[in-house]
Image 1 (cartoon, rainbow, N blue to C red):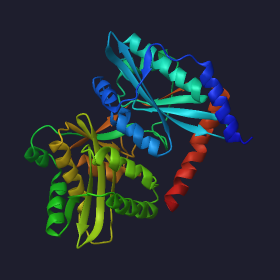
Image 2: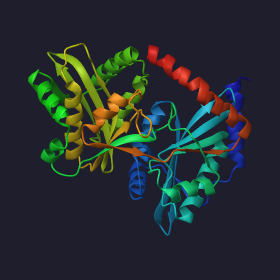
Image 3: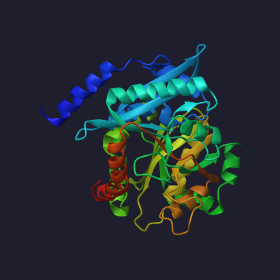
Length: 374
């Protein structure tokens, strides 16, 4: 019998030995899940139903649980699972979760019961959480520590949601938003239009492929990895097609010179990825693409935009690899946010130390190697 089959049998035996949670219930309906999650504080795209389906398309399994108290949802957690077949175990990840009021003991009890249940069923080595809450949220931080989580010193990892992000308020009308842009950004938006750059919304899955090809090409040039096309198709199907996202394409004289893929969840818009072809023409399509996303998010009812990670330290340093991109995002009226860090709840200590060592030393190397091939 091969290793994968043995691991599957062990996982099934573990599942049969664990009683289902009493305080949390598994969620199976998108509308009910999203309504429950959006009723809780500090909700994020990555705890939404659609994001779980995007992760499923990338090879992860998804486990969603809500906690009810007197009929009302007081807590929720969406866990994604990846298998480590050679070890016969899994890793669980709750990106931007769990979602709850940190002072609600019933919510903590239900969420922890769900985590331990899924961990036992999947023979998990550990579960990682990376909340989207500000670093000053002491009650949430202390709640995690009080329930057995260990706080990591890392400010970034190769596979988790960023801790240092740039956000932008969409308060005011479009004219006011434009006035808040840095002067050079406004000038470059005008230059792009005068030089014949046109930005339009993508309308087919084939255009997702064109955008992905451009992104992969630029990734090889600049040595950053690009995820597989299946993830982009999932973003298209779960966000763009239902009207909860947008694919923007910048074209010049019939050629694709840039693109941007964004989504929304609740009252916040999220930049997923952007690509700009640079060939010495100085078309300034980047500022125009970002501005059109601002306009889309405002029209869609968003109150803020999450521009994603800054790729800098906190506070930023001029020699940071992402300092230029960070400055570019600030030019749209953005601000830097320092979120709570990463926390692990460990179930198999011996294997945990092995995985952590691999995370520190092997994953950065694999990340760089992947960027060369994309």
